[in-house]
Length: 297
Ligand code: UTP
Image (cartoon, rainbow, N blue to C red):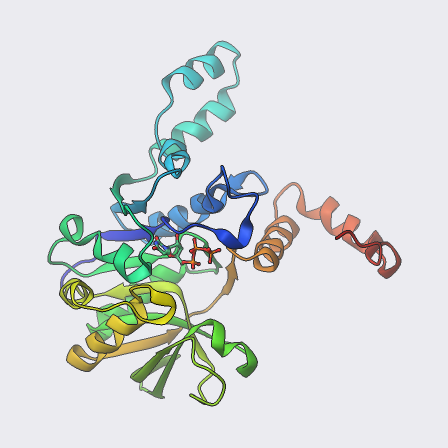
């Protein structure tokens, strides 16, 4: 079995759900406590044993590259001011992993963004993590998928169960259970199905483990839902050609590109934070229904 060494993280989307905040700041740089969302995602990759991150970027996203780069001037200032703990933290971030960037010149869709990585990934299986999809789990979600891949040797998409009325917001998979725990063999995939099109509640989240044949398929995939080149359409072809598994990962996932998902991520991370957790939980207990009812449009 070929070893998986690379992870592609597309961050070239427009982030319209978070406007006006994302007019000048990439949504992946919005902070959860004191770290941008993208750092949590890169840390998951590192903790899973991956060697290289390929960022698919666009105009206005250079702050993400800067965040993982070494800043000589800032390093000197922190040294002069004897802020050594902070200096160590920044050094740690810049040494986390090798980061390569590829430009997606137009936001033609997630499928097109992944296709942009073909030359850097080459002919080997790889991971994809969406830059605004946060997963908190004991074993990193990508590590769980890599362990499954070592047993099944086929592409894998991570899934979670969603209420039926929400399936129209996700890529949905249909399939049968297998001998592997929490794992389904995929028969059919649908991108954001209208009500009644599928009775499956298995929704694809932002973690994929893909074989390199996906690139050739993406190269000939026509624009689909929303006029974008959809990854789900290409995944269906790959599943037909080679087989594919859906894996119900262990952990909790947050759509940090959505306002409510982002808020949930902040609250959950804050509640279990080593120093802020206790005072924050105490504070939350004082937040009564009465104070919550004061709304702001
Ligand atoms: P989303 O649809 O969640 O992201 O795409 P978006 O387009 O940035 O956000 P909204 O919907 O306008 O608020 C899922 C992922 O695919 C990437 C996004 O950056 C995100 O990580 N993406 C999407 C690209 O890299 N390029 C694209 O053309 C589209």
